[in-house]
Length: 469
Image 1 (cartoon, rainbow, N blue to C red):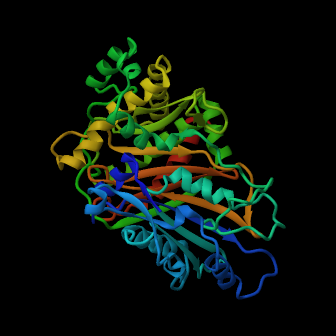
Image 2 (cartoon, rainbow, N blue to C red; image 1 turned 30 degrees about the vertical axis):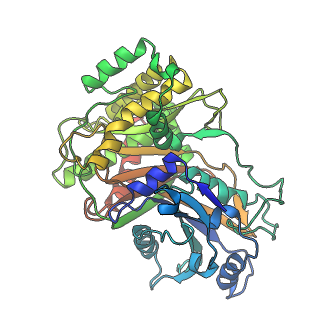
Image 3 (cartoon, rainbow, N blue to C red; image 1 turned 60 degrees about the horizontal axis):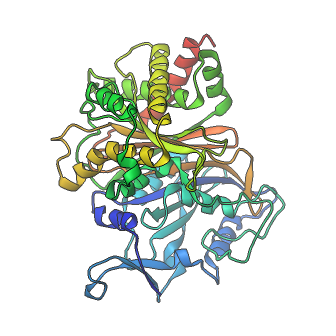
């Protein structure tokens, strides 16, 4: 069966090149069930490999030719080989987390073969503490990071005794489980903003054209580089230049209650604290490299307005979702003052968006995204000042412990997509009481990326001290 590829998904295929693989990834860590044998990981791999009925999503690959008038279409792979997509890997000794992150960095650097379905999964053994790792990558034309997370959740259970959970790529059309986390339908998720903004930029409706009076104030703030819902320029940094295809990935998590305690003492939100951690870490990192600009860095932050606990918004109405350009206050030495400045910047951005309709919010996001999208396409990054320096996303995940056939999921870490002119991406995912940070950067453009983890940890302590903790 041949089906057309929608313009946004086709855009990811057109944008992809050797320097910019356009896939999202995920790293999950599992604790083996008690009493299993030495062959457990091999058995786990074989169970995931030996799937008879593959879901249609995982069978299609992109193609374009004279017959399709040069347009991208999805076509089922008639020579599908599950062993190409599901692989068994082992870490070299000593099997530390460092070796695991190095392997994930290498796997995340290579493009997916377009003559095959655009996904891979690697079951990884060799961690000296006995844990099992799984790295997956899926092309952004096929699914976004949030959809990939939902697919994973759909095969996880809150029951540690359940033993008939399928692989993520198995056809589940006839399966239903009350213990699983249901996938939400008809939603726009916070981290979908860049794609949604691009789609809106391609065809802004009449409603979006009738922007409210807040637009004048928002653009004025953008021109003065005060940020808000819109940023028209940000200081140049080492991140805002052409990149290579080689990736480096670093990940770590912190207890949410520890971060939330800082927010309670300072009258700020959990998301503000996460941004302040990133701000302090970026400041310390760039100071080490003697590369900190005088002007504060600007981050693009997807946000939900009047969001429910799930922090998703229905496409049929309800909660509004948008992107706020936040000044990270990296010019301030005091961590408490940085947190306060970030809190004000977030409030200002949300206030600007609160008077807009959902369509107008997406249009504003498209306006803010345009320079970042057009820069790499026109190859003028490094010439035109960037609208923001990096993307920082905070995606809520399950609050309770989940299992796959008795194996406890103890950590999940996102890998994202750096692009030309935006060499670093920070994505956070909450799970079971922890906030996991996934940092994905160009190996050459962002040197010693793993040092940012130490700086993030130092910043938590500094914020606790500033809050009087």
